[in-house]
Length: 201
Image 1 (cartoon, helix red, strand yellow):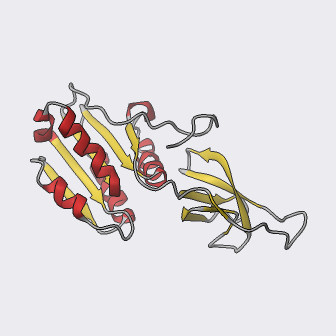
Image 2: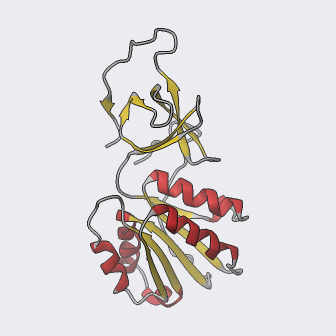
């Protein structure tokens, strides 16, 4: 789970049903589906009749979580083929959302960051979004030099997928772009790049 030591790091307290909501909108990636399944096991299931789910499998993971979600008796369920497709659907859904809608987001940190970025752009108070980290600790990293973003980074240093620089992955997290920052590790002594360590499996 994410460390709370670095002040810029978001904290993901977990999903809890907000009983006074008129609509529950769940945005789930991969193992984030298990966060909703845990709520069903632990609470009154009456919220399911006014719950909508946008779901996407994580990478090459099996898609059985989608089948599990379909059986919950949700008001609406939609499974996206890719994260960008889901985020487009989320933007359209939030643009027409009415008062009383609560947003729940669960999945990897990079996914949560991207979903929150869209919600905030559309005027949702970030403090009102319920989040839970599930799945890989891989990071979404922005190269501070070329501004390119690389998803699913598990090692530091790593090669920027845009400009090719060897980047050290900092613990500084930008909420504005939903990504960690990567800085050139051999700027002062070119070619002296230590072997990568897998720190974010």
